[in-house]
Length: 149
Image (cartoon, rainbow, N blue to C red):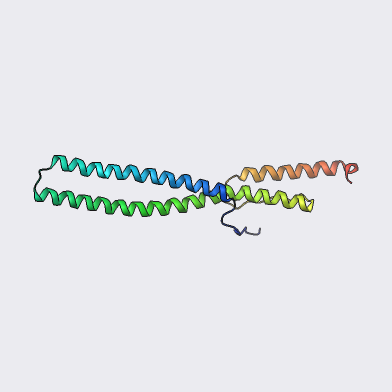
């Protein structure tokens, strides 16, 4: 069996970019909530600690560490969101694109060839159903030779 090699990375710009945009908006919302809670915790510390140099230094250290951890989280989560968004969108939109191309090729060539998706693609059932349809059409075509042109 010949291994399917990816020729295009973005197969449906609008759908894939919409999907990645939704993930990015989720990322921004999560980031905003975490920022709020960091600021809330720092504000709460300021209210309950005495106003002396040790307390101010402790709050400053806590604030700096919190924002540093948040920065690392921010960069890694952004990278993870982009990678997973791209990977997932390819696994979802790639098979649909492949099936569409395959149907158009069959129409142009006036042939009935089965389609094959990559092993880890979503919608394997779609390829299976399409291939069953092709087999049934071939059987009907073979049973009715008088209907051919």
